[in-house]
Image (tube, rainbow, N blue to C red; front, side):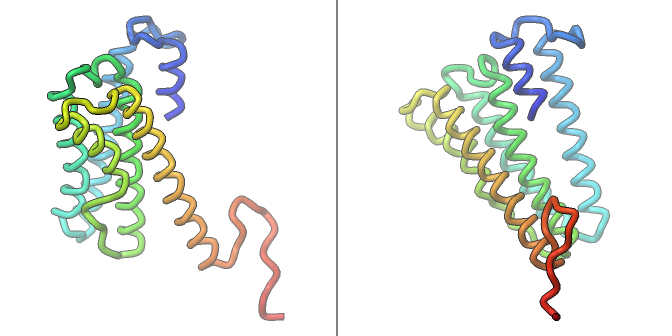
Amino acid sequence: MVPSLLLMYYCPTAREEVPLIGLSVRAAIVLTTACMTANVAIGLYSAISMDMDALSPGLAFLLPVIQALAIYKTSPMMLFQTHSCLSLLMIGTTFAKITNKLIVAHITKSQMAILDSSMIGPGLLLLNQCFNSFVDEYILLWITLIFVTLDLAQYCFAICSQICKHLDIYCFSITSKPSKRD
């Protein structure tokens, strides 16, 4: 997420050359997307190879892809072309939460739901397009990016809290909790 924010800061129109690496912003976005896709493929492969239901993780990753493709094709403002960094951040954050849930489901050997609250962001953009862009797409893109980011942060906080409670430890602390057995 930080590299994308740096791209937005240094190259706001996505037509400049990226400092330090000498690539165009479009090439950097393609490279980032390729890395993200490879990461998702590795997550899917590990989930499938570990005796998990092969269809469930695939559907969980397929729904945001379908939403993103539909937004790409039907956006009257050409949202993915004009604001590619914001769009990729929003979709990437959605994939990050789904990947985190897949990892937790694998570790705990529990089922993973196909639908997730992080899919509300791309869903809102798609729904807005069905109603002829009732809300400005750029503003809605920012709103959905903020929502998806807060959703991911809340999920990570909840998981860390559950793990710390189960292990009876503090998070990000060297000292241990006082023993309740005394």
